[in-house]
Image (cartoon, rainbow, N blue to C red; front, side):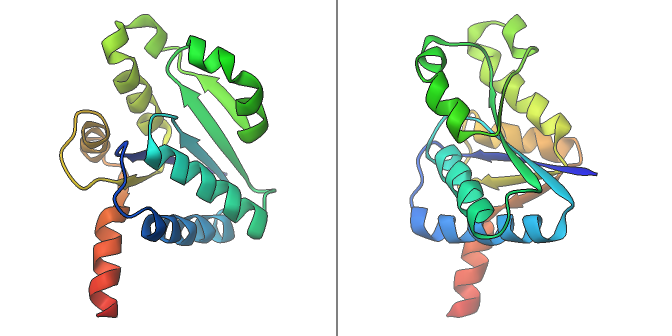
Length: 163
């Protein structure tokens, strides 16, 4: 059975080293406990880059035969077309969200995010404040009854435990 994880977080990260360790720990646990894990990620900021790197790192260190890293793009953009060769080498799969291709440009990211949430069993996020995109996606996931782990809160709890 496929277990699907979607990543959502802010474009700018304040504590990237701590977040990398937290991502590594969660991804390692998923790879070691689940039969097959599909990781869904966008390409819209630092959190997406950190999450993608963590999946790559843990797949290399632990195992890469029970998971896939899927880049979910909202539409075919010139930036995507210009970088398609490197994207195809980096990600296991690249998907275009067809639902997002039918909406006005200002809504494509939101529709892509909602479609990722609908597919996900778990949302791993990094939310420190209310924002227009990542925060709204996580609020939607909570409304849909999805399991959400906010890594920012997990990092604060870990730091408090270690003090």
